[in-house]
Length: 336
Image 1: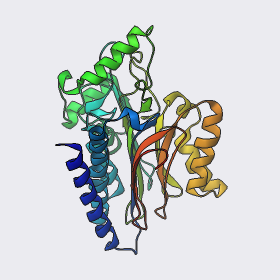
Image 2 (image 1 turned 180 degrees about the horizontal axis):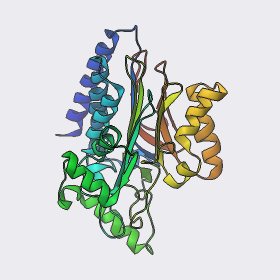
Image 3 (image 1 turned 135 degrees about the vertical axis):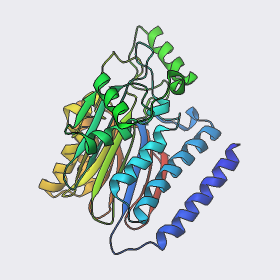
């Protein structure tokens, strides 16, 4: 399919969604936001066809999650569905598109949290799991734990009937060449690919008609990372957080900084205790503290009123949202 056809489908999809949201019930707000990573995303680094493909994938994931909310489904179901679709795309660093570690393997992390009871589930350093977010959800709902990792998490996945895939399912030539380039540069760990430095973690946040918030995040981590390295994505409070009293947040960026600053929880705390608006809290953290620390990346967030925030301190972030008013955002670059 050529780029003009994909772009045409995208326009029709968004137009249809606009009509759909306009006729939605307004008594109880619903909202959703998704991301596919933040970083130095420049127009010259994407072909028109690849850009159209990525926009279509973002649109599909957004509409899938929002459709669940429209039908009265839960925010947990909505973020799970959206993230699963992003994990199934080779264009993002999660699931099928996960980067390779220093041993040439794919090690993935994911977490999910619901804001009503502060229940959460996470997995770290798992291999061959088709959709790590589904495993993280099983940890939340079918275990007494919050996080499982490595071989133990993989055995739990087998016990729960979670789908596995062979190594070749996760192989993409682009990711393999990124690893070779990193190794040739004195074993440099790449947070992202060069020249387009982007952190293609994926995530979603949502508000359902019952007033419940949820957040989910999934990633393949860093190219050429050391065996066993874990970033912020599976860390509750760093890469993922949800609390009905404040907001739901999913992060993307240089994980070590997000862990140190407990970015997701800090944004929610600013809303809950300091009385900041969602946008103010996100800006204070991402444009303020995180930037001052030297960290780069971004977040998506939603509050109990259905306000959304898509904030980043990089040149761009793959992002899309529908807020409580039905306003649709779908963008890649910082100037959109």
